[in-house]
Length: 524
Ligand code: XMP
Image: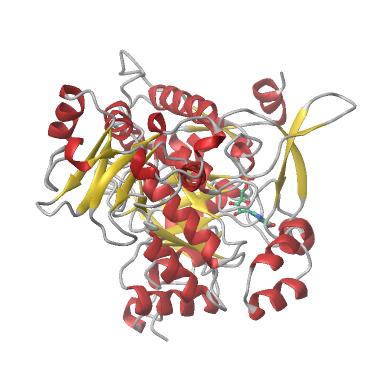
């Protein structure tokens, strides 16, 4: 198989007992010669997770925490200003969450428990939500009724529609904005051309225009939208004041080279996953997450090979694994990021039902020890406090995936429910293999293999109610602040510097906790 490396380079199995003779040099005669015997791939981390350590405060070097950079790599080619990724779960990441995540400098991974079309539509919606230039603006032809135009605007959540000379002509006839649409119902059957501003009276510009010039034109003419057309009035794009303002106000948002928000999407490793991956890529997904419960498996190797064949060098993040061997395996099959975590999540029952799993901080450390910085690690699951994110980053992760911590927000899919007894507001959070999530996805997914698989596999996830938390931007703002403070306590000017300093040997910086010091730290 393609992923098996030549014998000369074959990685040493990590379970082989390591006997090293360590000589202390630099002194004569050498004072100490000793034998070290350690079977653990991540010495000092066996059985450890987030609540087992505090971070030893270092000499502070910052005068202000505001400017501390948290930039970190999702993959070699994708950098995030906020190293947070929202989980590909149906109670966490749809289009709204993915948009909010990218606006705050993180990334959303749109879940796959839905039809290919629905998932691809969500990717496309995020890609077109904000950008310097809307390359394919929504258009309606001359002759459309005002009632239809109003419905169209509502459906696409837009306030201005380009009107073309005929359906599909691509030639600009005018612009209909919400200000041009009367409120009263009796106008509904009138035609858009009666109300639009015709092209002769519109301010337009040629297709090549910088963001700075566009900003100037929008300001000088006091207009909201600037259609980009060629000499024959063929539509090449649209620039809006809202988007230009967004670019100015959010330089930290996660954007591609064209200024569109970044978005990722999940695929499986069997059935229609290639067709799904192709549709998601066509819709603009910047990174694909091949997400299966047991990523250290032949199925994963074959899936990655097939995806590479079908899609070339699209960034692929794969998981989940939780061991040094799993990490090496992922590196050797050529993935762009390794998702680490078996069973730590709040919606997970894998450890309870199968005994499979590795304490999350140990898992992160094992994988880092195996692959170092050669492949970025995404720590996935088990985060309950913001300090857990920092510990994950210091012990080897480059980014951290959150599920329950982002659930219960406005942007997470699902309705707010009110508990009649307590009058508290709640939302549902559920594991993707919970009976509820599996059942719902079966109505959506048109893939016999997947359906059979799902029906055959007993649940390894559960549904819970979580408190309603308002907008996710408040949570991300808090995480950003706490991470900056943590970096400051680590005596570094930015996250990258903190990682360079701590990650090669985190135990120099970590304080192991006793039962009583754990109580002192966390019981409030
Ligand atoms: P948190 O702790 O952030 O974890 O809520 C989110 C992660 O949980 C994983 N996940 C599952 N694991 N059964 C599992 O064993 C499930 O049904 C399930 N659903 C989600 C997933 O890795 C997610 O990112």
